Length: 274
Image (cartoon, rainbow, N blue to C red; front, side, top):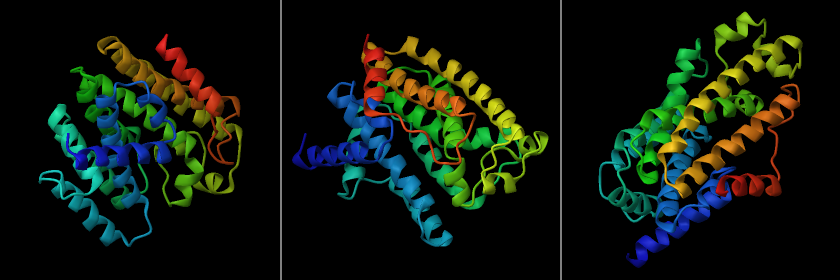
């Protein structure tokens, strides 16, 4: 491995430790070569998110995201993320389509800020966290993209619940519009942070669905080697703990997302290593 590649991997691992809320705790249990490859995938996903959620004009964001599409198909130009990702793609069968799907997910955030039905939201989720799962499965070493996608969708659905306030501030509502109407919740309730019985019923419905996808996605563990299973189990455990805290609060997510302590995170890591 050249010095350039070593430095590139060091940079994407540093980024993962600095920016990932839960990702870094999962990948810490992986062998070095797999940990680095997953960090490279994370760094790419982070780049997509940073462009889509940034302050640049929409047209500029679109150009930058389309450029990510293009650069996935050409040799790296020396930037750390691209060097690390290119090396990881040479070592592991990382789905190119999954990486392109990630970019399409970022483009979707430019084109729409509301989702009429859960089917529309599910398609979006499959292009973001679902695509991350499919990209990572090539590193873990199991040909189970559907299970990986289901787990990714579960984690994204928990993100949707956790980040209601943050998304509102970005002008986005990911909760399906038909379900908001069905439960009698208006966007003005989200804006005002109203913790009403209707809101709690709506969120309990979202929670039950996320748990269904989570249980489906966790069937992936039986197809993975021990350390890859520990990694994925840690991701799932951290998100399950977040969901449990949301539920325990009566679905009061208006004061910001619940925080897991470092000790709690390490306990979840340890539980998955047993």
